[in-house]
Length: 289
Length: 136
Image 1 (cartoon, one colour):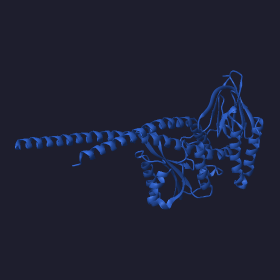
Image 2 (cartoon, helix red, strand yellow; image 1 turned 90 degrees about the vertical axis):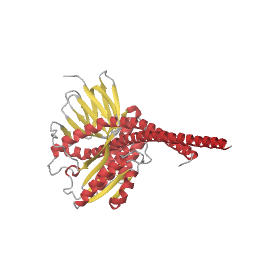
Image 3 (spheres, one colour; image 1 turned 120 degrees about the horizontal axis):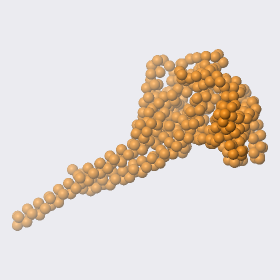
Image 4 (tube, chains in turn purple, orange; image 1 turned 90 degrees about the horizontal axis):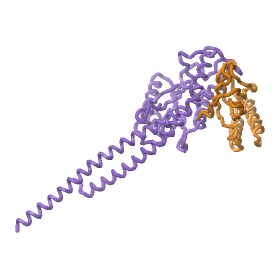
């Protein structure tokens, strides 16, 4: 049976925890709004880029001179997994859900006899993957100093990935990130970026005059398209992270509230018991006289 | 046929401008082109330069782009620029940053990309001169 003083201490400590989680929830809510705005502002560019690249890709597909970023290297032996997670924890299952699908994919590929290389973006993913897939980690991008992800961050990652591709380090690249659905739901998504996947229903946009040639444009566009997809993923991830943190902290705040109620009841009971005990002692003392 | 076309300038981070225009001059990689309503659909890559828009009210608006591509249609022109900003935001500091980045790339570029990047730097310098900045 904890003493009254212990209970009082515990109530106070839970109360200050609740203050912290409440504050974190509000900060996450403010950041979420900004992150969502950023994601929305970036959408027109990404959508048009995708439409143009798909149109071009459909018309160039199958030709011998198609760029390698589109046609691939002709092999599927080495896979690069780009795992994007947060720099910070305390955001519910956000990091572990990405790591989980990435790990599952990695193990499946290893089981098929493929070579797997992992590039991590964000500290948390690296920490979790290092335990069992440490040998496969080939690089890490640190974004802990970045307050708001910008296109420059995405371009730096894209240049890293494209450099590795040009050096023949891998054949297929896939990014893993959380797609923002709502505050309570973020969907971990794998997305292949190299070679560029061409949707089945893509129509060749043969109507255009190309200046310079289709392939020259595609050569120029594909690296940009990779950077754009990474940028979109980073923004979605940022919004998801704040959303996940917001709901995790909301839960924590509520749990802390419940705990305080429970402890307060226990505290009151103990106090009452002590008072009753003292009264009994006084009364029986008086009767003995 | 409409006498204006829809002009959109988008950069990866935001939509810079979206207006109705009578004509748009685009700094294509293989020479400038002017798009007016009814233009044949075309797709071109860009070199650093000015995109000049003649708006519906007849005034000219200038925007600086540093590369990317433009999609021209009969009723719309979309410029997807790596960086795009109104002419007034293109200051010496911004220029210095962009050109330093281009030079850094030129320094460690493989031989086959040398010419392209050297041209990029030259285009940027020409752009600076035209905006009244020091092209150093």
